[in-house]
Length: 280
Image (cartoon, rainbow, N blue to C red; front, side):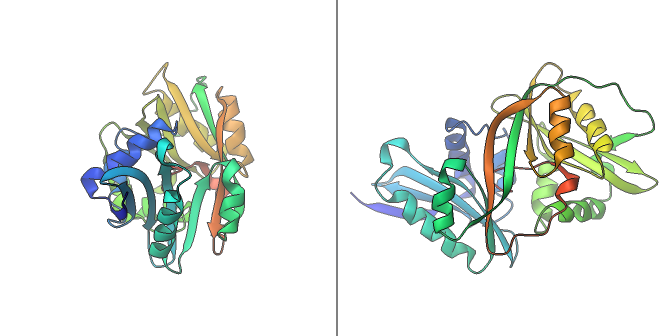
C-alpha cells in the first residue's frame, strides 16, 4: 500500500471539517470557507492508495506565528504512523514560527515531547442560555459598521497575529451575526455568533470588561432563542468563566492551549470567547 501526503485544495477543506464534526468538535457551517483564507498551503491530506486517511492543518498567519489543528487520522487507519508523518510535514511548514494548538488533555504528554508547553486550559461551556435583563446605555451596532482598523486593533490584543482576510470572511459569512458596542467612538467590545452542526457558538467574544461582554452575549443569544449555545472560554479569565455559568451554561469539553516557542502575551482578561479550537 502506498501513502502520500499533499496539500488540500480549497474546495477539499470541507473534508477536514466533516471529520472534525465526526470527532464531536462541532464546527461551524461556514468554517471551511473562512479557514481557507488564512494559508492556502496550510491544510494537508494523507492518502493511502488514493483514499483519504488523515488530515492536519498548520496555518502560517505571519512570519512569527502559526496554529495547528484538524489533526485527525481515520479510525481504521490509526496506529500505522500516518499521524506522525502528517505531524512532521506540518511542523516543517511552520519553520521557525511559534506554533499554537488546542489539544485534548489526554494528548498533552505527546505534544510536550514535540516541544510544546502548556499555557492554560480552555473550557467549552454549552447549554440553553438564561436571558439576563437588558442594560441601558450600551447601544449595540452591527460590527460591519465599525471601522475595520478598530476591529483589527482589538483583535490583535487577544490574538498573536494579524488575520485580516480571516476576520473579513468571519464577520461576513452566511449565517454569522456580528455585533459591537461603541462608546464615544471607541470600540469597547464585539462578538460573532455562528450556526454549527449542533446549535450555535459565540466566537469570538472580546470586551473591555464583564458587563460589556454580558451585554454582547445576550444580544447575540437573542437572535437564536431556545437554541443550544456554546462559548469556548480561556480558564484564566475568571470573569468569562463566571459569565458562562451565570447564563446557565455548563462545561462540556476542554482543551490544553499549548505553544511551541515563546508563549504570546495576550490580553486574556479581554477574551471572553475564543474564535476556534482549530485555528486559534
